[in-house]
Image 1 (cartoon, rainbow, N blue to C red):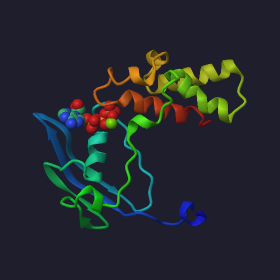
Image 2 (image 1 turned 90 degrees about the vertical axis):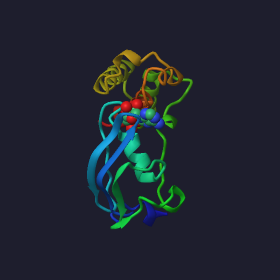
Image 3 (image 1 turned 90 degrees about the horizontal axis):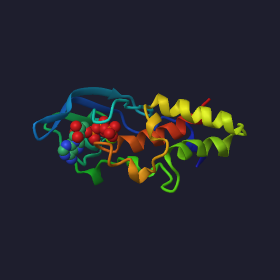
Image 4 (image 1 turned 60 degrees about the vertical axis):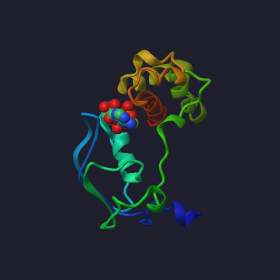
Length: 169
Ligand SMILES: Nc1ncnc2c1ncn2[C@@H]1O[C@H](COP(=O)(O)OP(=O)(O)OP(=O)(O)O)[C@@H](O)[C@H]1O
Ligand SMILES: [Mg+2]
């Protein structure tokens, strides 16, 4: 398993998006995106809720078909290849939170597990991190209460992201 986890071993395919577009009804969810992802690299798509991140990932995984453009893995077009033949893994954004903890507790959890920070420091770090992802007003909400507020579940993802950010320095 060590070889598999070794970050210096190049793995995976090069991914290229060429002028990719996808509309829902009259609205463009992804509008003429082009992106080159070198093999073995780690890439984050950052953007406000509704900006098309999940749609882009669904297009790459093959769960959605583009209206225009092309997707290439190692220079081969996979646009007409079904998801189960693309050899792609996708983790959905709703699984990163503890349902019985509110957002602030979710963010604090890994901090408490991994550090010996005093409680006021934990609370300060949680507040800073929630502010960073613009979720300062949602600290008291439980994960099941987030979906109602987000067009596409981005609040849950932001809380999950905050949870991993909080432990980082
Ligand atoms: N199945 C769908 N039917 C209709 N509209 C959709 C559908 N999926 C996404 N959209 C719309 O497409 C746009 C992009 O949504 P998408 O879910 O890709 O955004 P996102 O960047 O992943 O947002 P979030 O940060 O909330 O997860 C939004 O306006 C969204 O409402
Ligand atoms: Mg999304």
